[in-house]
Image: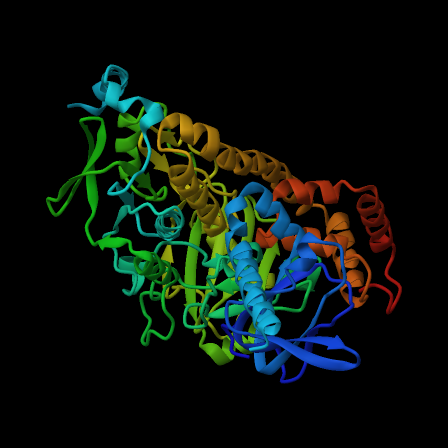
Length: 123
Length: 467
């Protein structure tokens, strides 16, 4: 990790958040890639690959559920943690801070809709 | 037209014209916005104004007036600041999609060393992450031989330009009104009228006096002098002596409120804050054993590679807005002693969202921008109480021993609630509002533990017991 790199480095395969665990922060990828995996019937299914500037774990900021998926480093990835309390306090002062979070959630819903449509039409 | 005459006549003129009813003052397609000052406040304002305008499909033109070229070294490209981006701002920028690159961040800070007359202790970041960024505002100090890192201000300016802002490399030296709109004149002879003017010139600019005389109700912030200097140590020496720790000092030196040494790439920055910083105060700080221990013994601390005595705010401005004008960053309100870049982000963004979503009249700014400024100003009052207390505490060795003991114990134990460590961390890094820090310090458990540590720390030394 270089002197000017911010955040923390996770090595290839290292788990950053684990499905089923409680969480109280979200994460922003500073450099590298991470994969989102969901365990179903004992098998890990890859849901997405996240890249620089993508964030994950944001659902833990808004609901009191456990982590819905595992996120694992793909090669070396550098991650910055965002504190729940500081983030929510700031959103209360400046609601426009939520624009990007909502934007990313919209992208995910759009992608899921497309995948659902493909599944239903069997393409 | 004289500025003094203008204030009253302008208001009269404004109210008598139906087309400039304050409720009609809004940005629209083709509106022109001038930003005076291309430091963090000006660049953040431009970036977020354009970002929000694009979201609501408004096409506005933004011109940033900045005479300095931040790719230059020494005063030509410097904005005279300690160069710390707080933990909270690093996180907020990441959420905004702005990841500070390693070409700008010279060192990620993951801990700080607290030095007191009774000893020193290291306090690590809560999540063992590098969450504070040490940067240079310009390209570097006067004697720099090779520019290895980019300037923060240059990077933020690039972000604003990338969003569509137009950079005008000229100094604004005159302001007037033309048909109810702000008109600026530059040293290069350019005369331009705008729909909105954002003033982000900081408190070291003479331009604020012109605005004080010409903008009704605006009174610039009160300021004090601070001292900032840089020493060239080279990366290896910095790594050896400081690593990725910021060093902060609570020393019993009269008039000194707070001092810090910030490791960067090849240089370290020394910042002194207090009342009327002068030569003798600087000398007694640099010669204190606690400071000397942070540097190689053979390094001469005089003269430094570069130094300056810039002003910093001790109060906020009075009414930092008017119809079609808003003052952001230091020329409006900033945080006391800490996180000036964070305050620039907050005020710039509050002003930009007001201008896009509400309007650009004084009433709009009063209703939607002023609360953001007031939050900072009220928090600063609490900050003054905390700093007054730490000033008293610096002279009380029993209290200092209590702090040292409490922090040392907390840092050794994993899993315990590091109450004192976190309070000091947030106080020195500017990561949390002063109000929150004070409330935590008044918590009965905190007070109880502190008193216990003061009492135990004051007992006669038993070998191997005292940290």
